[in-house]
Image (cartoon, rainbow, N blue to C red; front, side, top):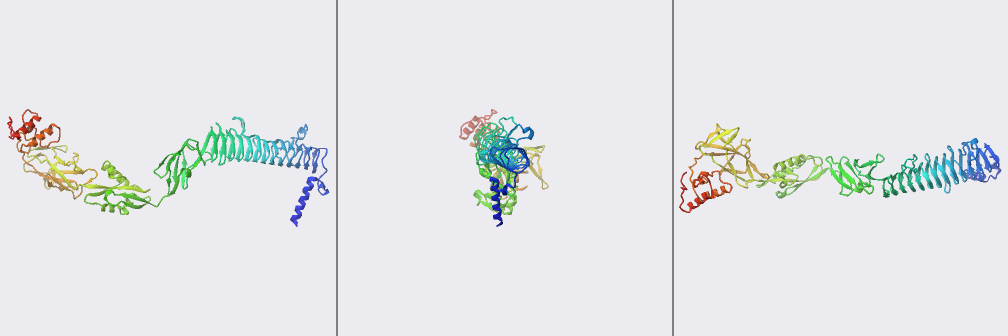
Length: 636
């Protein structure tokens, strides 16, 4: 019952205010104004005349009625006439307009001055608003707003510097050089007409239409339409800029730019889940958080995954011109040529937790089955495989023909030499496992037999030693294609003649004695990919040689022999003349290899102090029994 009574009373009061017809309502107000009142200090229901200055309340300012100046403490509930018409009395009574409160304006308001409040305007405001207008309704008109306007559904000609229009659903016909909070209507131009003007407009959010966003003016969020822009626009999804002119700047959050002659910045958000991005050269930051790239330009960034995460995918893409993984697990990327905003997902950049274990695959080639072992992430390669028993397994694959040497990053055949293979293997063993790996087991071929040929010492030959270098030194040869060589570096004390003195080796110096015993130490060096072990049989001049200083350090024992006198025609010095002696002469003349025992004096059959093809011919004639003038076969 109480609520119903209050509602009925409210209806009655409203009726009283609107028509002024009951004595109940009329008793609260003084008589209506019908003539001219200079200072109205009483509450009036209706004004039908002219009030120079209103200091109280007028419920209805009727058609053709005028309130020249509505004072700060005054109130007009409904204005159908004029508030603030200009007259010569303005000098006496102050600025014409409203400094108080007008609830509803259906007429003409010349100026709503600083401190003035207008709640709803359905009429015309021909001057400035320096105060507050709550609603400028559809069909209403405001010449210039330099104050606060909450909502505009009508027409505002100018929203000037200092003006704040919170919500525009209507029309701003000329320039906005103030601030518009949300525009859902139309703004003909936001900003000044000159690039050098101080007045700049600002629209915080645009969902309607801005025909021209001029010069230094800004649109903080555009989801509507901007026909021409020479200012700055932050263009969001749904927003459209028809023409971004030469001086214009558009930061694009997903909107469209039909034609661009200015600066069109595209957002590049390279951050994926569980990763951070350090934007570098080429990018700019509009607000300290978002990173932008000028359309068509390129920029660099470093993407760093969180701890225990890794970047799993940066696919090849025309927009990612390069992507390089750094030693610390981050990626350096260059992004360029963007035509729209992109994110890490758009570019296929993804991060995922790193696994606890990685798989190391070991290729053994023809020497056994390939191996595969799980190793902990971050473990040292050698330790992980050793703990898993991989090296024992590989060693067990050893056969009589091969021996496991080490693991490497590529097959043995792809290395140039033993040093390169050894360096690679050493670095690999010390590697930290951070990904799946494929490595290769290197199997060296065993050398089963070594055959050396040593030129025996000749009785009476004098040996000298100067600065540790022995002359003549022992001559050791190996068979062609044997896959090993003899170490002959003179800085090492190998390949020298020794004698035994009280069970100790002594470097020999002097003349070889008849039937003397001498020793030669040599260091055998297998070719890359080959291996000498304890089972390798080594012979010198057909006799087995014992190991002296560890594997490959061998001691050869030889005795001297007397050299028989030279025989004419016996070019190789073996004591007899046969067809091979003529052949040796031919090889000598052709610069082919010849025996160390080749004797120039014996080969010079005709004694002309020159070995020539004629000497070989005399030997051939002598062998077939032809008569020759030289004593071939006789001692020289």
